[in-house]
Every structure is written in C-alpha cells, then in structure tokens.
Length: 388
Image (cartoon, rainbow, N blue to C red):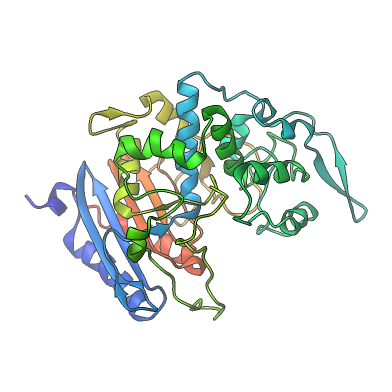
C-alpha cells in the first residue's frame, strides 16, 4: 500500500494542492514552499517547490531552513511546561517571582488625550503569559497610546539580550488589566526569560538540551551554523502586492536577543518531529518529553468567555497554552475539527494539528505579506485531500 493510501489521502486532491502552490510560485506570489501532511502515523505527502533563494536562483530543497517567527512560541511554551512538570514553577506564580522588574509594572490608561499610569488590580501570572492575557501587547497591532510607547522603545531590536529586552518591556505601561483580555503580545518573550532564570542558562542552550536534542531536531536554533548557510530560505525581494521591500532578519548573523516569541529557525523535518510529539501525547520514538495530560491541558481552551482584542484570533477559536484551539465549527472560513490546534509565523510558516483526524500539516514559506492567503489556502486543500 502506498504512503498516500496508508495516510487516507486522495492523490488527485494532493495533485491539486501541489498545482495550486506551483501556480502561485509561477506567478511570483511566493518564491517557493515546503509542504507536509502526516496522517495515521504516515508521512503521506511531502513536497519542496519553487526556489529557496530567488535572487540566486537556488531550487527549494526539503531540508531548507526557515525563519519560523511566532512558531517559536509553542516550543517555548513546551519548555515552560517542562519546568512545571519538574516542580520548578506553577501556572499561578506571579511573573515578578522570577522577574522582579514586573513587580512595579503599571497599567496605561488613556484619559483626555494623555496616557496615565496606574497600578493594576492584580499581578500577571505565568498562566497569563502562556495564554496571552498578561496585559502585554504588540506594537504592530491597532494603534493606541500604549502601542506607541512600544514602538518608540524599538522592542524589535535584536541587539539587546533577553534580560535587557524584558527589563525594558517591564518599564512600559500595560495595555490591559492582567487576566481580563486576550491580546496577542510579547508575553512569550517574557516566558523565554523566565525559562532562562529558572534554568540558569541561555534560552537557546536550554531548548537545545531539553527539546531539540531529545526530539532529534538537529537543524533548529536561534543561529544557523556557517556550514548550513546555503540552506537558508529567502523571500522575494519585493512584496508582490505592495511592491515594498521585504525585510526579514539576517539568519546568518547571531543576535543578542534569543526571542522566545519569534527568533527560531527550523526545517520542515525538524518542526514535524515537534508536532509528531504533540500529536502522540508527548512522546516520540520512545522518548517521553511531556506528560499526556500536560499536552491535553496545553491544547485545551483557557480563555472561555474572556474578550479578544483585535482579529488575530479568529471566531470559533480559543487559546490554550501556546496554541490557538478550534472550539466551534462554522464560525470561521477555515475548516477543521473541534480540538484542532496550531499557530503560524509572520514570515509565512504555519501548522495545524488535528487529533480527531490523527493528522498534522505544515507549510513552510518566506512570504510575510501573504501569510493569511497561503495559510487558509493550504488548510482548505489539506482537508479536501482526506479520503477516508
């Protein structure tokens, strides 16, 4: 029996999926892509299309290295839960227990055209950081006085260490009262620093020891060794819709900031091992990384009726501890089963895991302006390829 048949996938539908992305590449909507579907424990489909480096005309290879941006967040969330399983922290712990600078953090309140700072009603917790209810935000979201403070602080600089980054973040006002609103944020950068403080070593080193080495993720990290520079995937020089230059961070240069919210580089093969571990309930190839009930807790909705800020989290979805979680059918255009979880990265990478279908799917591209377009196309066509 073929791998496609073993995975319960439909060959003509997979060909339509391949053709759709090949057409996008031919029309210069994206340079290239690596696409993967695994179902029922079988790698049913794996394709490398287009160009890895369009400027140099280098063909895409299956082991190309991509900037995964916010797909870093689930990995750092897992690192946090590993510390929880070892009794090193509690979800109820105040962030200030590990990062004293957050003991004095203040809430920003806009009044009569000015931004006042007041004490929040309660402190942010580790749970808040994991589910993005800490009161933090991102500067690129809908403009506000607090987000202008974020932008002025140049929080995206890769020249500060994690400790310096978090100290600066703690000096800025909160966007919301902790625990009251889901707002996509720099919370996972703060988690990365919490992990460093508890572990007593840099985040990248800790992730290597505790996650990448046990899972065999040999091409994942905050830096790319010179011997692997030729495998780094690059974007088109200009956005195909706006014509604006596309500027991603230089993956060949080491950075002081090991951003827990968006700094990792990885391959499809490596990230698939991480997803396979989650789909298996915390184990991979005989290695138990996380407890089964810990994975269940991470991939359950932790928001309930809490309000959501903006449209980053689509209707019919909640948020767990590092993942968006599908909670209802028919409320969003993307298909999926209730309980499907996933996330994406700003440069165009995306994944989802559907335990009901015993499946995960992974899209790796470097096309930041077209993230929503390609992510939804990929998801629609993956589900259309399920045969039985």
